[in-house]
Image (cartoon, rainbow, N blue to C red):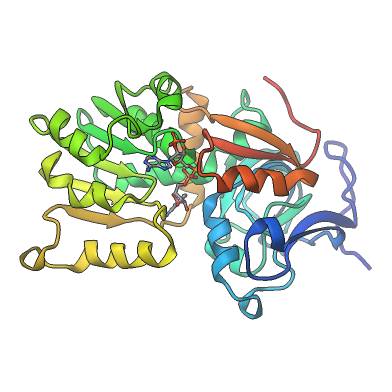
Length: 361
Ligand SMILES: NC(=O)c1ccc[n+]([C@@H]2O[C@H](COP(=O)([O-])OP(=O)(O)OC[C@H]3O[C@@H](n4cnc5c(N)ncnc54)[C@H](OP(=O)(O)O)[C@@H]3O)[C@@H](O)[C@H]2O)c1
């Protein structure tokens, strides 16, 4: 018998079973994901919030896990994706009191939750504070926007923090039109960067300028982009470079456009899983006298906490960041959504509508 709590006056009844996409094997999401409609709705443990998910967002990292992890190492059932917005519908006896039943929240899961099989392409999720960074969604934000806020916003925040970015600095953001890049441009601005230069394809130049970039470089028109950056910015090098794509040549050429005491941070795995790992090891450990690039390199993978989520929620409430939404898909159309993600041409976030409960502004 289900131990789910009864519904309350402020939330709809909690269904005993739910819809969820499950990872059925190792492979690309377009072939290994199966939709079920009969998964038991999780019961919250004492430290958990039970959240009815309104909208979720896709992230390339989840695809990497589907491709890399053998099925025998995967928890069963295993639901993909980490980014969500929804309503708290039940709370455990010792869950954090700032998220009462009825609270509109957003957040993203940690690796720990993902390895336990938890994911957000489902009607409900039960999570504790050590499994996800969660915050109250600003009043003026829709669930659709909130779903795309946490993973990329927090990654951008962590990039600025880890790089030690100071007010008045000059910052370059590679991949400025993607999920992380659109947030990195805005968060760098919100944290006081004097000048932000974005790199993206020509079709997205105006969109990135609209987010606050002073200049935008079209990497397709200026190929190879490292040479162009050296010519254009060699005499006024950047303080920090945030690579959200993972272009190794951008780092190896960076001494020509990054200050000697500058910092280069990469979060992207554009050149593939093993290349990403090998490049990261080389950039971190190869001594300069053996050909290592003479600039500080940081490869980032920081879990999101409630503090991170609250910090990005504050920027959102103040109008300093917004979610750029490329396209919204219904839960049943997730495979189409993954095809768009796999194109590596998404503009901002790909959102999955799970309920029709969105609050429009
Ligand atoms: N470590 C972490 O904490 C963390 C967190 C989140 C994401 N990530 C990783 O960060 C990466 C980006 O994630 P995302 O969500 O931003 O992906 P995304 O939304 O799919 O972004 C893809 C973007 O990459 C741009 N792009 C493609 N090729 C490019 C190139 N050669 N030069 C410059 N830009 C290029 C595209 O812009 P155009 O169409 O304009 O070319 C597109 O907007 C992924 O590898 C993801 O796994 C890491």
